[in-house]
Length: 181
Length: 228
Image 1 (cartoon, chains in turn orange, green):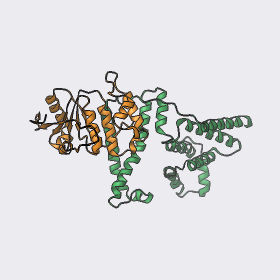
Image 2 (cartoon, rainbow over the protein chains, first blue to last red; image 1 turned 90 degrees about the horizontal axis):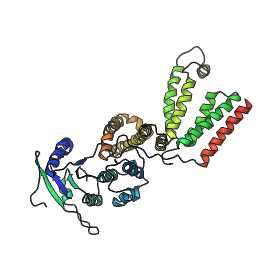
Image 3 (tube, rainbow over the protein chains, first blue to last red; image 1 turned 90 degrees about the vertical axis):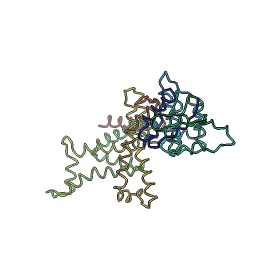
């Protein structure tokens, strides 16, 4: 289990995410599931409140792929308790994105590639995301500005953030930066 | 209820309306008049004024036709159109459009989708849920576009401003809605959902108001049965 920060041509996030996925899979040697923001879609559209959205997604997981956490544990782990009865569409853009990310991270997957996952999120939410990402499988974060993620200020009142390893994409292969381990 | 009345309440209101209509008909009051009066009262009770504009536009078309030169005076022309018994008269339009606009304005689409999901008709619940969510998505996107225009000093949220800036908000609104529809399935797959997913089926709450409305409708139907 490791968390990587991938430095790549920012245009690859928008226009070559399929190629980027192939290169990351070749580098890690496993199939990765991709999270990427999809324009104007911030929830499934089949639910009204946050509670219903979580319930809908958890109840629709395939039998062979049970969610990592069930409802109560999920809400607690992702600090969503205060939002449960609010409409998803009434949440701020950052919270809506965080909810989608949390549901994506709750899938039992060996590795994940997260494209532009941390923009619009507060530092506290990014720390939560990193902490959960460190719990299961590999996670590769590819951001428009990876330096912001690498320079994330530490929260002295919370457990230390997991170490971040660096990957570099030159457009043909993804390799680990020497000395990043 | 957050998004409006439940499907059960809608059926109860419809039953009361039918009861009033048949009882009024025995007193010689025409059905179109009962329809207009009942739904005018319901529109006022639920304060859904913006949807009256839709009705004004639809029936304004008839007004335009009636405004054309014709041999009989205007009030007589209106009466003849309302009493027209041909297959698709103004009355049929009135009985279809007015209740439809009213119920689509006040019914909670989410609870209706859950009710429909209980019937286990394949795909019916999710499709209805999706249609319901479009209503919210439109208002949500429109709010965002209004904010973008407001910081540029353009007021598009007020009634007149909405009409004056129609060229500014329609294109981004349509573009956002079309893109959202195109990306919805990919988003669901990303979260591991089948498309369409299986909805949670919950029963509509039946309160004392619903029971009173059904009782009222039953009473009116009995009254009509024994007085006609």
